[in-house]
Length: 287
Image 1 (spheres, rainbow, N blue to C red):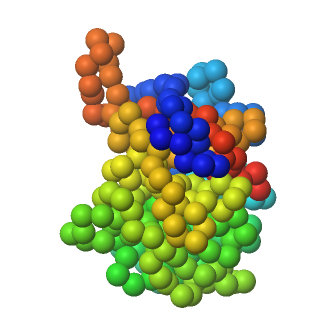
Image 2: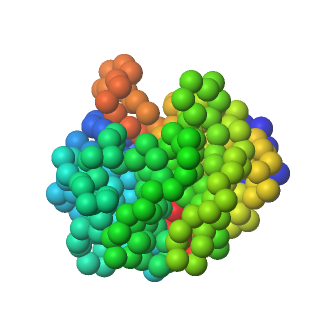
């Protein structure tokens, strides 16, 4: 690990915490007690991983639940990928938040509902090939042009939305940015930064407004002006990342693949690893 000033010290190492067979979801969320919430597609459970690496089931029957997001007010949402895809609110009350677009089921958009970020207005932004906003009433609106989206995250002040843009056929990924209006609508689409590698998956932010984007290179760190600061390499390909721990100075990564009891690589496994940071996650929101 090469130092990134103000972000991570030199020679820090990732620590393995946990793995489980099955298709684990994209968006992990840190909890106030130093643990994580992890959605699992295969079992339709949301697991709570405590600081000691032990798991329990926090929510069941999530209809092939994938990425999670918790709003600044504590509302927890999950994107659900089974037939009749939807956004469900899990807490404080459990209910379907959005499952229709222009009078048709979300499935009619095509593709798989992917990642999510919740705002303080009661709405959520989610990706499904394109970029969508479901307001507090569940009304869904599409935004953006020429987008091949995956990960999505709001800035701390909720004035900017960042979404990864894989750009069909391009060797490098990118991140697009939008200005967020008071009603949650989006304007001024622009390219925020080109990534150093292909892809561009889950994202998070820190207390200084830096953006952390997972890609083929690892975790790419970008400052709030769009300047690339460096890469935190990972032991395996990484799907998603989130700040957590009691002081939010631990970066957690959900990594692709794992090993069996004999140490052989197996594909249908996801692992959680952690690494200590100088940077601190934004305490106003769970991720």
